Length: 152
Image (cartoon, rainbow, N blue to C red):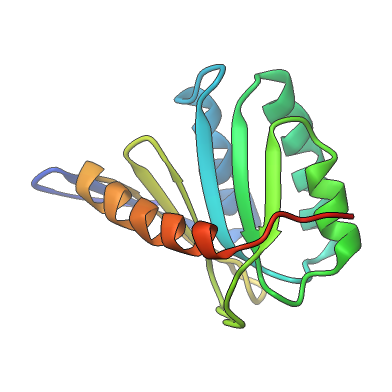
């Protein structure tokens, strides 16, 4: 883990799958019942150990009554979307554009998490900055308005 600070910002870089999971689950230290986080650019497929982690994570999120809006890559299968939407407080959809990127983003409160999970050594970047979080949230909102609710 590496840290850097600048005026109004703190950046932390995590390495490996464990680092990715650490950055992802830190939102539970900040979000309270009724709060929400957003995630987009999620891959259409993922390794089995990622899927197992997300299942446990969504159970914990639902228990804490935290909401999630998720935008998956357009090629994601119906089974994955049906699974994610089966958890209370989740609205999972497909991206409105056919863009496949090697990373995904999550925003909650003043935090942006950018994950680059490919390969044997994933990298995750966590940025604490209210202006940056707000700007990424605006991008998400544009995509969200263009996306369609998933109907299984």
